[in-house]
Image (cartoon, rainbow, N blue to C red; front, side, top):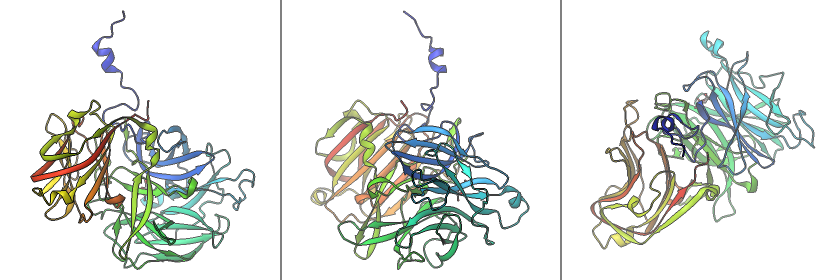
Length: 507
Ligand code: FRU
């Protein structure tokens, strides 16, 4: 019988199975990735482009990397779609299907895919001039496999604004026009066009609204039905860096109305799509079937993105999330839930019987597949607990035998969710990484579901009916293979729970 030496086995690091490599999230085969770009669904394929530097695992001259998926879960990597040229690097943007061939690049039988991106010109930047960024178009007539840049680019010239980027284009049915939302300094500007090539300035939104502690980037604008009503509202997503509620990069949103020219909202305070440290630059798919609004973000934070310990690749996308809208008293709130296609990777599942946590319950003792990736859903009974000893804190901890851990908890006294990431790395690679995140929230229902997608180096936490999401990455020296529930100063019941093994998407 052939006997493998230990060394032979150790040498073989299989692509997509390196240390820290996400197993149920998209990440590039090698080198740097930041924002997801150009998400569009066409002929059975979800396209995902992304900010990519193919020569190194740190940020550099930007290209659009490319992958496609039939189910939003399993990805096929394709060649780079857009390369930098004399007009500049290829910064973030969007893509659409030009169904009516308004641009004239295709035909009605073969409508073109249009990609809108920002040219970021390093020469103009070096010359310390302002007009660094402008907007451009490329088209594809072969299902996104090859792209031709429009010869008259740029289609929107720089109007004298330093940060002028990240075009998100959509077809506005009522006015039969294309609309673009563009991050422009501290506001979002809107333009319209009959053919996606000639653009007219419409209006801007932002002064006096939301958070302005950083640069406004990567907007998105779409309508959503308010759950359980006949009402439709418009949601404007505005990514901001820094200025997020937990530090660094984050995504704020505004709910209001859009009449084809102007976005208006009565909501002056920012609402946050994700309170964690690692969901940035998220935008949604164009043309997704069944009117679904599906978002994917970059699971990272500019505060430490270039420093983290991934050697051959850097960056991953969040798990794709289906967005919804609910009305809570006078506030409209976005909800995010992992897309239902997660079922395609579910493996063995263990039902947890009703139980009580009194200081400690080691969940990972109860099933064989203690290693990520796993999905976990737990329903805590707050009402019952008022009759037993109410704990000051309760929650879940992922940890390893070395004493490294990440905690996701609820503080019952002061009413907030929190994540403690002070001990979630093997080595300190950035002084910005460790910390405790706090999300004020009063649980008013007797029961509350906590849901997690736990991957090799990330945890996404969904609760309060998708109103609260907290996404975080971690880099422990050994994998977090212990999962425990804890309480402090009291007990809590869980009424049901399911732990499900998730299969790697990179088999
Ligand atoms: C957001 C961002 C965008 C820009 C891109 C450059 O993370 O700064 O505004 O287009 O990254 O890579």
